[in-house]
Length: 192
Image (tube, rainbow, N blue to C red; front, side, top):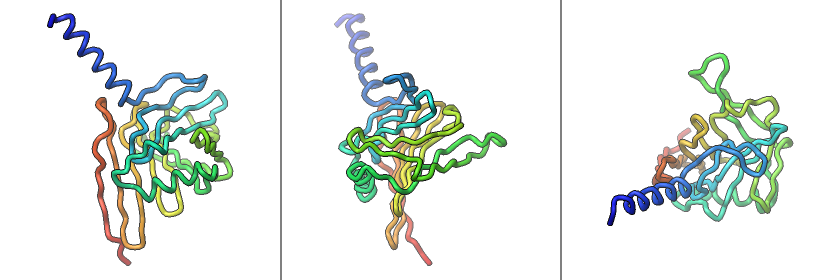
């Protein structure tokens, strides 16, 4: 095989890997992409977009949720879209403008959140929040949470925290050029 053919094959494979696994930023359907990525992760998150009036829409694909761990939470996420109702609130993890070493969480109240069960999106008004300051999203459920961490407009990890009466378990996956890592699981007994 010639060098040119080998180069073409390697380039094609790299481009395919980036498209299939990578999380990126840009424009989509007239909205600014905060991030987009493969939804084959433990929470099924596939992207977030902001429109010209600062409404943020977060997309999920519950059919793609990895079954490697957080099955209880996966059911709660799916339930949100089946009922088209999200009643617990979203937290946006932000840079703290006073001290870049710390982060602050801005809580979006449930009455400011709308759900489109057909498109599997959660939308809320970000107010005067600057998109460049968003370092992550946290979605709260009855007893559980899930979220996504961002750095410089790229997804670094997704995670889910699941609580039972006796156990707290955190599942996480890292994102890289090659896709999602294996699910990491850390559990602690709840005492007291």
